[in-house]
Amino acid sequence: MTIEAISKAIGDESRRKIIEMLKDGEMPASSIFDQFDYAAPTISRHLSVLKEAGIVNTRRNGVFIYYTLNADILGQLANWLSPLLPPTIQTPKVAPKERAIRVPKPKIENPFDKFQSEF
Image 1 (tube, helix red, strand yellow):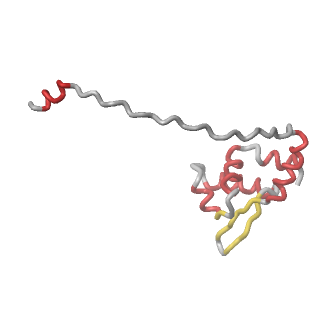
Image 2: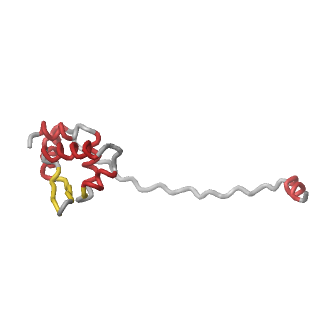
Image 3: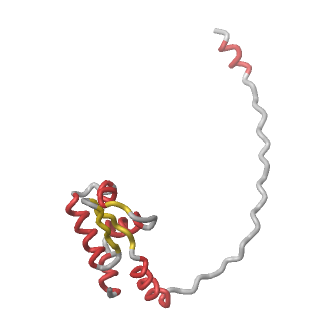
C-alpha cells in the first residue's frame, strides 16, 4: 500500500479509534460495533476503508469476522515518518526525591461542641 492510502485511512477519528482498539489483539466485528454510537453500516464502512488500505486483516469464522492490525503496513508508515521526526532526546534519570513526612496537626477541641452535644 502507498503512504497516501494509509494516511487517508487513518485521517478519520473513528478509524484511529478502531486501530487503537485493535492494538491489543484480534477483535470480532460485533465488539468493535459495540464501542460506537453509530449505525453498524457506518462502522462497517470504516472497517472496509482500513482493510482496503491494508491496515487491518480479516479472518472469517463461520458468520463472524475477526479483525487484526497489519503491523507491516504500520511499520511502513513509521519508517517513512522516522527520518522526518527529530531524534529523541535522552533525559537523564533523576533519583526520586524524598518525600517529606507530614506530621498531623493536633486536633483542637472546641469546648462548645461538647456543650451542644449534651442537648
